Each structure stands twice: as C-alpha cells, then as structure tokens.
Length: 312
Ligand SMILES: Cc1cc2nc3c(=O)[nH]c(=O)nc-3n(C[C@H](O)[C@H](O)[C@H](O)COP(=O)(O)O)c2cc1C
Image (tube, rainbow, N blue to C red; front, side, top):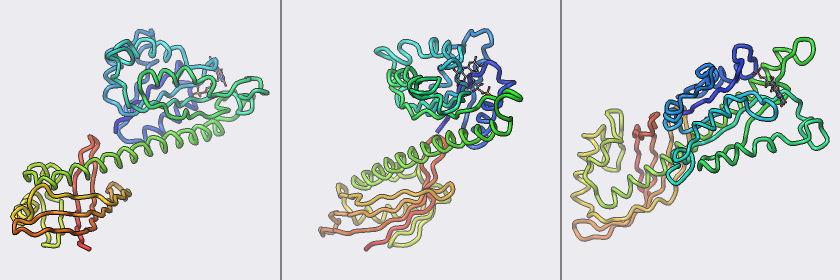
C-alpha cells in the first residue's frame, strides 16, 4: 500500500510541528512519498500532470498542513483547485481517485476549549473541515476522521516551548501512523480473504497447476495428509496424484477464516468442508482444518510460506 503525503507549509524551514510530524511519518510508515508542494511550486504554478500521477500511484493520501485562518494554506487550495480537475476527480469520467483513502492531518494553534460554541473560535474544528469532507465524497474517496492537535504554536516567551510543541506533534504523528498502519492491516486482510476464496474455487474446478504456481516459491512448504511437499514442483507432484482421485466440480466451503499478523507473516486459520466425487465412484465428505502462513508483498502479491492441512 502506497501513501502519499501532500505537505503544504509556506514556511517549512521555520516549522516545528509539521516538520516533526512529517519526519515521524517518514520513519514509521513504509512506502511513503512526500510532495512538499510549497517548495516544489513557490510560484504557485502547480505541475498538475505530475501531481495527478502521484495521486494515481497512491492508496492513501495524507494532507499535512498548519491550520491557517480556519482553513488550509493558500498553496493547498490552489493545488486542489487545479489537481482535482473535471474528469479526474469528478465528472462523468472523474473516478480516478475512487476508493483511495483521504486523511487530513493539520496542526492548530488555538487551544481545544476555544473551538466550541462558548469559546472565542465559536465552532468545532470539524465544522471547518466540512468542505474537504465533501470534496472527498465527490471524488469518491474514503474520508477518514481528521487528525489534528491543538496548541501547536510556538512564540518564544508567549506561547509554549519548543519541547511542548514537539511532544504534541509526536502524539499527533503517532495517531496518523496508527491510522495508516491499521488501514494496511485491513487491506491485507481483504487481500487474503479474496485470495483464499479464489484458491478454493480453483480447487473446486481442479484448475491446471499453473493457476497455483504464482503463489508458491522455493520457500513454500506444504504438509498434506499425504506427506510433505516443497515448492512448485512438490505442489504439482501432490496435485497430480490428487487429480487422479478427485473429480472436478467438487465443493470447498470455507466455514471459518481467521487472519492474524505475526511480524511480516500473516497467519490464516481455516475450516473447510469438502464434498467431492472420487474417480472410483465414491462420495467424499470431509472436514479439514488448515493453517497457512502467508507473506504479502508491497504490490499486494500473496506468497505461501507454510500450508498445513489436518483432516478432522
Ligand atoms: C497565517 C496564519 C494563520 C493562522 N490561523 C490560525 C487559525 O485560524 N487558527 C488557529 O488555531 N491557529 C492559526 N494559526 C497558527 C498555526 O496553526 C500554527 O502556527 C501552526 O499550526 C504551527 O505549525 P508549524 O510549527 O508547523 O508551523 C495561524 C498561523 C498563521 C501563520
């Protein structure tokens, strides 16, 4: 999963809060690209094509900026006006951003209590982010709950200390990191569930072994009731024997699927009901439990590391 950070800060060299958040994001989220739009386009002449390409390549888009006059800095507004164009972000063919995650992460100078009906800022922060929320909806993007921190302004001798602002920024960064990494896990779970379904529907029709090979490497180990098999060759040997016994058009019903993550490995626990006709004319009904260990690469490809089948 790729994450694009659109950093919009007109004075990034003086920034404390946004700089801290940006650095923490870069250190703790994999596959991140940063587009520092004020440094790239100090004359506000946005390279629309380049920015659209960055968006197309991303799954998650984080907008990182300081809250300016209850809104975003001007450079980000210009960026939206030009990059979220007709037939790209909206319009009859404007579905290019569909399904991508949209996350606002901004730093707020004023204290929390000022953003209430009785405070001097009168409105809640979420009242000020409504136009962005609707922008995301129109672009068919997935608008996530905005992440922001208060009291981020540092004026020597007047407001806060550098240490306090940096600590608040670190807390905000952690919430951004947790949100993005949580999305990655949810996404991985979706990929695995799709893969499991596809895998068994190909067993149902007894597809050629070339369907199964892309998910198998030299490191893949299969433990079937018939024995232990390694790599594509081992799988194919087992499968050739199985195809001699089980007829196509059988049914594998996935009764249970549980996915947990252990370091970079995904542990998948499955209960499968198999109903099949054998080539010798018998009806086979059996329940098996399976434990798989999978790896998902950055481009979403699934690789089997361990595959254990236990008949019940
Ligand atoms: C032009 C400008 C406008 C600002 N407007 C607001 C505002 O409307 N509400 C608020 O709470 N803080 C406001 N602030 C304070 C900034 O949000 C704060 O300085 C910033 O979040 C600190 O982040 P940084 O250290 O990355 O610059 C404003 C600051 C500037 C310079």
